[in-house]
Image 1 (tube, rainbow, N blue to C red):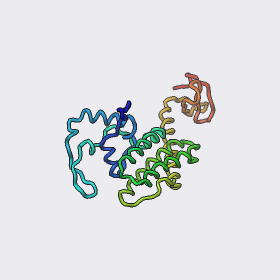
Image 2 (cartoon, one colour):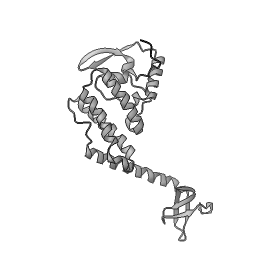
Image 3 (cartoon, helix red, strand yellow):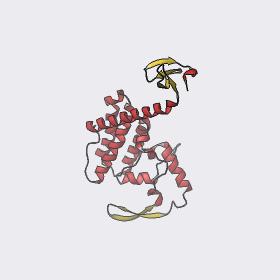
Image 4 (cartoon, rainbow, N blue to C red):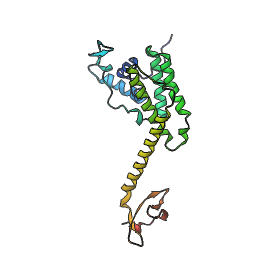
Length: 226
């Protein structure tokens, strides 16, 4: 047998330890950047052979400090893009199988969650990508919490009420952000024939401005700006 031509980067001991104990861990640990940061941490830590006391299922045991310490720059799941989430999920599933502690049904449910989301009609709707990412993040978080309580639900089946609530939340947040952007652009201000202030923001083309007050498209003219 010959040595492999490529050594795949591994997640941190902290992430693998959480996964082995069937505990929640952020998917970013399984991205290339998370694995690279874990490698840098292993190379710079002077206490990688130091052990700390922890408790697993009411049993006290010593484990390497590196397996108990989370990395600093890990992104939470809702900050990932959908493509990043899928890539990280695939890597995580490999380690779930490798750990030997995950029941096959749990691994299958994790994979089915993403299959169901990829085929869900919300993808075709406004902000579908963000809605899918948020749903996956929160459903996984709740699922792990329930597992720790010796309870559970079918992760691979989409919860329609949760999907509806997340859809409304994501779209409401988007509207609020758009309104905040409009307020920031209030410095582009002029007056109409009745001396009322008008507020403008760039729309479609840098050579045009949209008049919010009258909902009309106006050519760009620096003379109208205050």
